[in-house]
Amino acid sequence: MTHSLPQSPLSLWLAEYGPYEPSPPLQGDATVDVAIVGGGFTGIATAHTLLKEDPALRVAVLEHEYVGYGASGRNGSFSMTVVGLGIGPTAMLKGKPFVRAAHAYMERAVDGLESLIRDNQLQCDYIRPGFLRMATTPGYVKRIRHDIDLVNELGIPGIEWLDRDAARAKVDSELYLGAWWEPRLGLVNPAKLLREERRLAIARGAQVYEHTPVLEIQRGAKFSLRTPGGTVAAEKMVLATNAYSHLLPELKNRQAPAWTYMIATEPLSDRHFAQIRWQEGNGVEDARNLIHYYRITPDNRLVMGGGPVGLSSGANMDVDSSEPIWRHLEEHTRLLFPALKDVKITHRWGGPFSVTLDLTPAVGYLGDRRAAYSLGCIGHGVSTTHQNAITLTDLLMERQTENTACPFVNRRVIPWPPEPLRSVAAHAIRAYLRIEDWAYERKMAKFPAA
Ligand SMILES: Cc1cc2nc3c(=O)[nH]c(=O)nc-3n(C[C@H](O)[C@H](O)[C@H](O)COP(=O)(O)OP(=O)(O)OC[C@H]3O[C@@H](n4cnc5c(N)ncnc54)[C@H](O)[C@@H]3O)c2cc1C
Image (cartoon, rainbow, N blue to C red; front, side, top):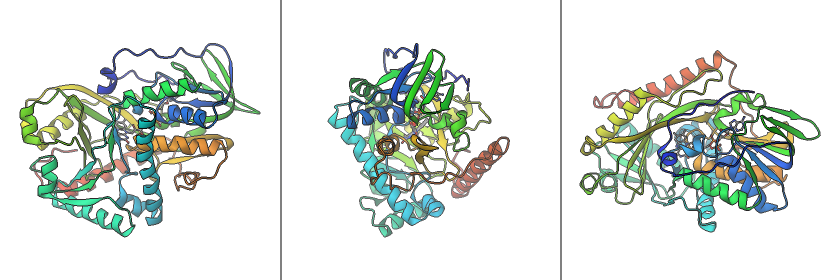
């Protein structure tokens, strides 16, 4: 594999991070117990989790670019319980027992990430302001209320319906008709979180090699991972390559990448907050399939992402920029909050997320019990990847735990078809999701096309 990855517009989090000194690339050969491919949340969290369990292990993380290059350094920063397209669609696709088990996993994911941050004093601007899924049309009111009935039926506590006034008392837009309210949501600065975790992993003894693409993997008595500067021999291996996984022959058809885009405004003023409220800094999404997600940062910027998603074909990963989608996000911001009409946009970026054909995550062994992988969190990987890191550790240590019993784990993954059918299927799924959103919104003439 010799794919080069694009150098794309930096996320707000990476652009504002300040100086960063990446670890040197691998030079020469190395022998380790566990080699981890990919330096995002999954790879780095697996490294420090493994070493917490067994400090004697020799663990190396091999990252193609730099730690935070992938979705982990670019995301919307929501640590949340959502799986796939949310509880309703997941119940339809996978059944209610799956949803109950998946939600329990995700509750552990959000709470576990919070404990990781607190216990290790990771400096990442973490807050837990709670989650609002705002209904912006009567159809979405019905959809959200249906999902709340479902969580009640499944005995999932802590989620409630807020009527229009209660929702607008939190964040105020004329479009809001009510909301799903769930206190279990954390917000982070993802670049700071990931690099604090890198520090933790290194402090526990991990070797992190940046600018070290894995070009080829051979499976023998040991794994042999070839990079430009040398080869790593490893007893065990984790593939933590997420939306880039189809570029590895080992994971070729298990996922396909799709792209989501974000913008950030300049810091808002007190005058703006007098109109839009948002005093508790809640994380907000809408109830569409192709969701919009947005939050306020500690320095009072509004960060908005989502809406239309980008697709690519084959090995092309150069889709991190989209002028039309950034424009859509600006229009959507103004539509929701007319008071922000003159606010400047200071950052625009995008990144790939990993999609399995049944829109749910997959974690498991690969070939035999010496190798494991994790992918397919769709746009909801901040918390999930951290729980998956614990699961990957359980798998590599060959333990059966409540994590390995989760239905994401060692499940059959429906393969994406080869190109050109993969592109046809991806476009068809996106078109279906768009049409359904249009049906929910068609009476709202004000909604810009997404
Ligand atoms: C714009 C955006 C917004 C999002 N918003 C949210 C959100 O608000 N909440 C949420 O929960 N989730 C969100 N997500 C999803 C979430 O960010 C991801 O699910 C999560 O970060 C995935 O982490 P990861 O470590 O598995 O993958 P990544 O962070 O993508 O890391 C994979 C790494 O593997 C490396 N790699 C690939 N191939 C090789 C190779 N051959 N050799 C070595 N290294 C390799 C890549 O360079 C990359 O750094 C968002 C995603 C995007 C793109």
